[in-house]
Length: 448
Image (cartoon, rainbow, N blue to C red; front, side, top):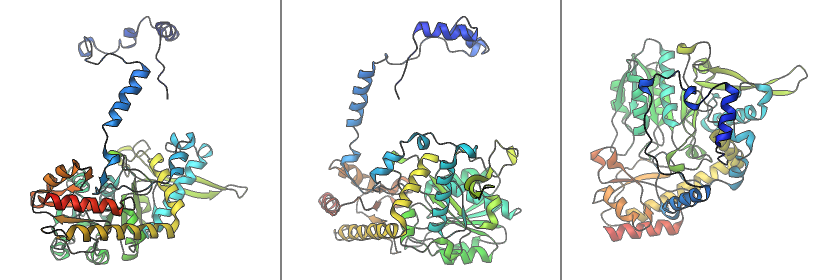
């Protein structure tokens, strides 16, 4: 979109229409003592040609697209078919907002309905909503829903292998409501210690949160966690940061999960320097009136024609206001539409095939890296497309050195905990070539 500045004559004409003599008069309601005086410290204005050249210069500094990347940790690089980028530019998608007027938004409503349907198929649940902000807020909303359903129970148990950012967001929501949060330690194989969790989960526990595959890439025993939570009358929330894994793993809903939520960025949305993402949330039919966000339903008019409507929508602007189920205000329409197109393009068989390809690439990467002397894979639990390697030097040093060779080596886990100082979380997807893996292994071996 072009920027169209206003000339002095334009300003005078607009001021005359509103009955003001000057720009300052428009702000006369603002007390004089709080007004900014002087000039803002800004660079001189640039022409459109100069501005275009400036941004091209900035873009040249972004070398990430030209590097071999093994970065995962909750945000994944997957191939996005070109038709998705093209279709998402259509104005009816690009300007999508919460579709309050059903007669004007049938296309958006149908897209959301299809997104919900495919999410339930992917997770093995009964109902899904029209997306949340991201995976972290989806988890926090799930625990808040568990709190509402449990009523007087005021404790949550969260596995320590849940993504640190997810845990931080959940803690921010819960501690201000007076809800006690207990953290489950991890086992030596990288999974969460269910025996320790048994000491924490009791009659005061409203919900249990486990991530699978977890932050370290390990696949958790969801069935065991469901049994533990349900035996105490608590709800099991399963977080999924890499939904493509559900193309090859049995969906959590088949193991008894009460909520399956997380981040759908992997489904057709580029990493985009870490955001925006697109949260998803699915649960059982009995919990539908406590579910955050909104739900689109399919109905028929008096003539029998199919139509789509907002069936349930709970947000702070509605009549309940501070008593609303959640403060989720957006349906993440643009990213949600991309995810819907992506899932529709691949289909059930395509998602499974792509998941298998991701797994095979990760196995090859693990074999190549662990063949290097002094490099080990400390966690033995099954994994999907990412895992941890332990180095004889700080992971931060390896990341820095390999970046100079055009390799994004992975995520330095020492950023999250000192005990992981030498641990590197690495990831392989279908975009990772065998040549890139070989270059990574050779570069790491030369460094060590």
